[in-house]
Amino acid sequence: MKKTITTFVALVLVLSTFGCGKKASLEGGNKALVSFNDTKLNITTNDLYEELKEKYGTNILIDMIDTKIFSKEYPDSDEINDYSKTQLDSLKNYYEDDSKFLEYINSYGYKDEDELMDYFKLNYRRNLAVYDYLKTVIKDSDIENYYNNKVMGDITGSHILFEVNITDSMTEEEKRNAKESAQKKAKEALEKLNNGTSFADVAKEYSDDTATKNKGGKMGTFSATKLDDVTRQAYQKLKVGEYTKEAIETEYGYEIFLKEEEAEKPKLEEAKSYILKTLSDEKLTTDSKLQYEALKYFREKYGFKISDEDLQVYYDNTMKNLMASE
Image (cartoon, rainbow, N blue to C red; front, side, top):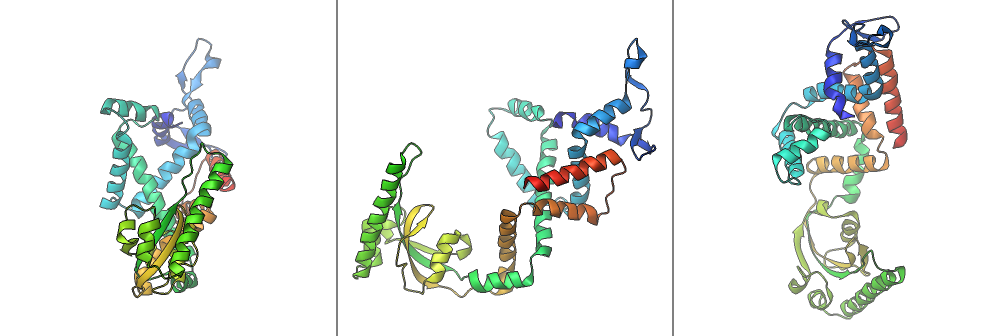
């Protein structure tokens, strides 16, 4: 699809007048672009335009619209350029030399690295727009509720990890046995803790985390914002000096957590940007249509209008299908 961008954009640039029915026409568009002995077979510039418009026009036009809008909303910055350069370099690392990389991006319709960089910049700007839109959707009460119930100060803690060694080649019974084996070790460790053995000694004996077991399971001091939800919630329920009374299942296996210290949590204003980002991510996870609503919001904010009625229909159908697919 992208391979026709250059041709189509060139045609769009020479749009001059609109005929009846609000359909775009081209200057000299009725002249033969391809001619035959039988003139009834001739292909005009307008014929080509109509074909390209139907097949590729919507996506190209949307990119052109968003490039105009979001380049104004989010002018070039180190943030945008650094992100785009990182994406470009990451992709280039898969190829032995520049010629093979160029051949690859050419196959997707990008004539050079600069054009691909523009693509990365556009996507990054769209992402910024989505999050700015969501800031207007999230209520102050949502922010305050999250702050009161989920924001914590920095934690100093330790853990004991019981790995569940499961591979894709295992049978269901083998996977179940692996989990039961980890649970059995965790139960033994908890019994020792409950009987007065120090957390550090139990960690040294039982933990599968080679980075912390010889330090008594100590993970140091860390921001609660860096924790996954399961771990954060486990620490949140603990008082200083307490450990979890059961092993918590996490992405790493089963874990017992000890809260050694907790700093005073940051003020609301200091935590607000993190809360907004977290709530925005949650909203996008539960309702990914919001990303398209955000882009539509910005387009309408700038009062964009499509004068060609066919392209308007294609645009409306594209947005409707995108929303429905999500």
